[in-house]
Length: 98
Image (tube, rainbow, N blue to C red; front, top):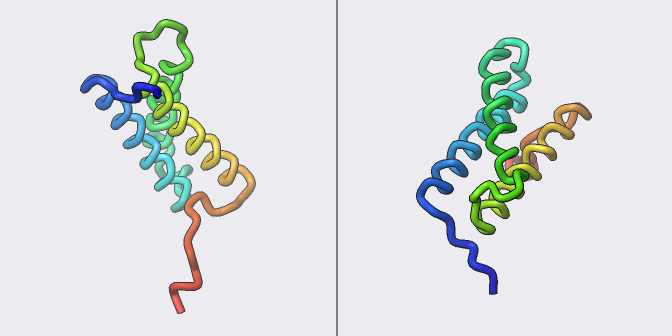
């Protein structure tokens, strides 16, 4: 059985990455990358730097923290792909609106 526990510091890093991912998603969902260019650039730059930590050999990140960060990286990749394809970055169930 894997030990997926994380330290308080790792949780802080993961929370920062999650917050920046939410910022990116919000900006892309609103279609305001041109209006919020500085915020978008900052959020993506910080997010990508935090994600890079889980790819550094012997970074000191626990297995649990690496797995969680890889999950955030997967979400980020999916959001970027959807935005580039002109698809919605947030999937909404439109059937509940009627």
